Amino acid sequence: MDKKCINSTSVTNWDAYGLSEYLLMAHTSNEVHEKVMKEKECFEIKYGLESASKSIPHISVAAFLGRSEMKRELDNVVQNICNQFRAYNVTLCGYNGFAPKAIYLSVQNHEPFKKLAKGLKAIDDFLKSHDYPLIRLFTHLHLTIARRLE
Image 1 (spheres, rainbow, N blue to C red):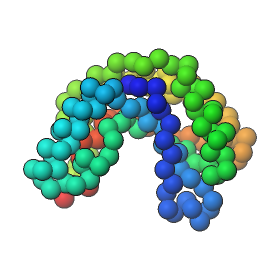
Image 2: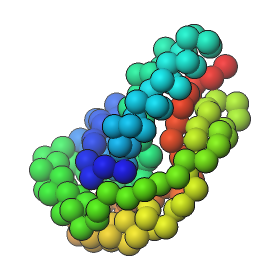
Image 3: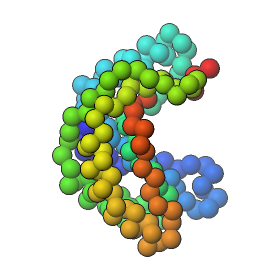
């Protein structure tokens, strides 16, 4: 997984509260990225799933809420945590799914993510000091191939 590990996406229903939802993702290497994108494109062509190739291959690690004006500070906290970790190998093993809506590749070794989760305590502390909900760590780690299936 690459060290690029911060992305934020604003969720419409949080805008009314002046909040943004931040999603911490582990990105794949270029080689894996290309292979997964080819697989996503196959799903798009075979099943007419335009959304399959629109999303970047990643493993969602955690999510949390914060005010938009805190973005720079949150980015710095997350980047400092990520800088403590080297890129690491993750084995993706076999297809699975969330019936009936999504197909994904399973993550075999969760150990690197457990170590990262311990490092994310600094974000919890930061959020707690600003009276925000604590970080949500994802425990079912996977890399989505296609979603919104009929």
